[in-house]
Amino acid sequence: MEQYNNYINSVWRQSRSQRTFNNISPANKNDIIGEFPESNIADLEEAVTASKFAYDKWKRMPAPKRGDILRKAGDIFAERKDELAKIMTREMGKPVFETKGDIQEAIDTCYYAATETRRLFGHNTPSEMPDKMNLSFRVPVGICGIITAWNFPIAVPSWKIIPALAAGNVVIFKPSEDSPLSANVFAEIMEQAGLPKGVFNVLHGATEIGEAIVNHPDINLIGFTGSTDTGKSIASKCGSLNKKVSLEMGGKNAQIVMDDANIELAIEGALWGAYGTTGQRCTATSRVLLHSSIYDKFIEIFKERVKKLKLGDGLNPKTDVGPVINQKAIDKILKYIEIGKSEGANLVFGGKRADNGYNRSDDNFDLNNGNFIQPTLFTGVTKEMRIFQEEIFGPVLSISKFDTLEEAIELSNSVNYGLSSSIYTNNVRNSWVAVRELEAGITYVNAPTIGAEAHMPFGGVKGTGNGHREGGWTVFDIFTEWKTVYIDYSDKLQRAQIDNYDE
Ligand code: NAD
Image (tube, rainbow, N blue to C red; front, side, top):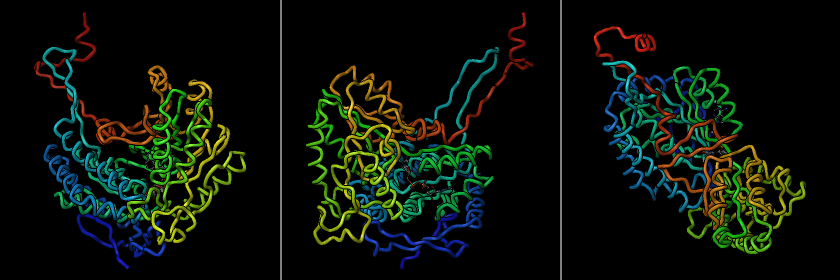
């Protein structure tokens, strides 16, 4: 079996723990991708020592020079796009056209961050004193511990790592144990781009090394993407350590469809939003809220479209929906389907593991060897139901009915999450009222709940986030501190708030 290593100080090495874990393709349990190190505290100490040494030089490199390296990384991501997309699909399952999009997000992020290194604007302000000047500018935070989920193995890490590096920080990255190979290719690309040694390190493993990173006193910031439960526990630890922490967590996103909407467009959006990435997106459309006058018509057409989705290997271009990530995910999704049935929701399609009798992209591909679940559709879902409230993170969509825009907004907002939201309408008033009232970090008008662009703020409110935004210019608020400077050239002592107000 192929053996893979950690990446510390530009050296590929095994863990001091001597322990490993297997990376298995979710599409085929017989396809073992390789063995990865289960890192421990000794590995972390080595990575921290290397990072500290590297930080001293990296933070002093002129920011546009750092940007040149990141631009080069973007070029290499583009050159290796096809190869990396196949690796990602093999290890986490989503179809290759989606993994290509995942890499494009990293390319865009590299190019955007590279240009931002020529801005990283601060502020000059007048002083309240004569012959004095005030300014403030951004400085790096230090060593950043980056911990991420597996569903966007390149895009999501890039949203954190690239701007962190652009701002002059150094990074210790712990990818998900379900997508470790993509992280190693990420490290290869950073090295190929010319990143100095120790500036970017990768430690593999799960909770043990994740917790060690969070607890390490010399790691100044934690950037986390994952479930709300894990994020909350990390945040409370960071609170007690007085450590900066940015959290991107779960979602329960709703698409509202008004009676005046383009129904065909709304159906297309809901299909892509609900079943793309097998519903395993933080921004997945897991609820569709339909105006009562179009409710039956929408469901009738939508159900037929769901039936046509082909399951299979994401490497096959005919596949619409890939597997779910692992056995734990299968158990959780099937449990929620049972909950939905017992709560009285109508299961109108799917609801089971998919076997070879299901609509496949290739008749010779054995669905029984992979983690395949039928795209599932519930109607008649009410807001008290757990399938309406809780994140399932799988190919399960709940449809509910409303009569007025106010009711739709109230339904959309009546969950503990607040990442993405959407409204389909051709009425200007409806769209702007929804934009104003929906409690979510992102609102799409006439588009599904997914589709972030690298140069725009990304993140959520309520149970989804803790007040930070990745993407665009706002990500630099996470990865920088402010330095405030007063320059007094009056050649005398000027006492602020005293001398300038002395009568
Ligand atoms: P998870 O919380 O189980 O794991 C996320 C990461 O945290 C993994 O690398 C894991 O090893 C690590 N981890 C787990 N326990 C830890 C601990 N105690 N201390 C430190 N690290 C720990 O999440 P998951 O199942 O991998 O991912 C799915 C979740 O991620 C969903 O809830 C989804 O909505 C969310 N997600 C959010 C966004 C976003 O941007 N908001 C993007 C992608 C995924």
